Length: 91
Image (cartoon, rainbow, N blue to C red; front, side):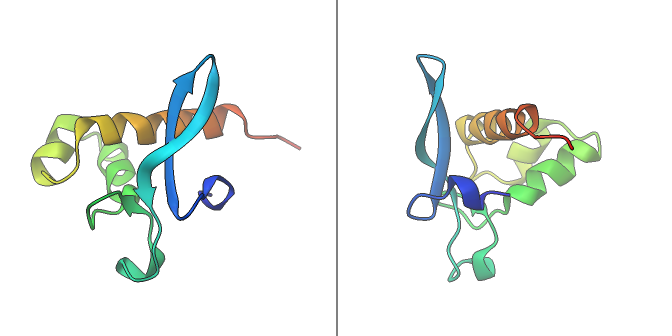
């Protein structure tokens, strides 16, 4: 899912003039958790955030349990997810 946005294994989204531009928020590195997408600068898998949200946990609870992840990182990942889901092509 994230491969289409990879640029030197780092991903992020920043809205500028209604366009998405790449910055650093997600790291995909085979040396870190075997290439599992993680929050940049951490070993916290992105999937953990979505697991929390699916289980009706809050972002605050997620951040309390993973203090190396910053709120800004979570916000960016959710922006990426929203953008990807809004632009999903249906057959």
